[in-house]
Image (cartoon, rainbow, N blue to C red):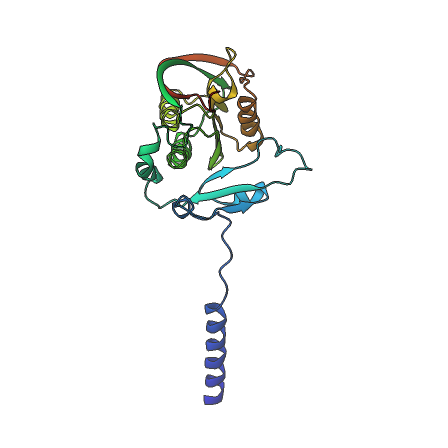
Length: 266
């Protein structure tokens, strides 16, 4: 009887040991944005949209906007970081870089800041039967703002974020101050709070012979369509405008800050 008991005990300890050393499966999520946004921080690389979708955390990512994600021949590489669900608001990261959000740091010696007011165009698709997730928009917009707060002015921004099935893309031409881009994210989020209708929604400043350096826009898709968001950002990069929509509204008299000139004179 004692031999049987010892055998059972040995088997129990063996199984317990096997469970204890079982390796933890690798997380599908990218590295934390809190560490990636630090000076010299490293970002993850994602080569498959399935990995992006497998992560339940909010993910910020960059990609080559002219390498179409819906082309099977595209070698996809996303530079990404993630915001864990239980982490403190990532928006606090912006306070560290408040000195560059409305400055000429990183610009040419001749650069000057110009403040004005602009009218923005807001457009919506599928407004009659779709609704955008406000919680996911808020999480993605906060993550994007944190990244913008770390960027230097006079540099083009093409940045994306995913929360749930919501994808947001933002484009800001090099002349657009990062402070204006961050304010636009806040304004657009507020607009969606009052009217979240649509499967896709966008706000844009484009047309009127604007060069791409003076174009900006934000595009939201509630069905996880990375390709559609990439196409919108690519359109603005080409100094174009989103023209495929069901409804259009004007957001008037928005405070705007731009930098001129971008390049040395002479």
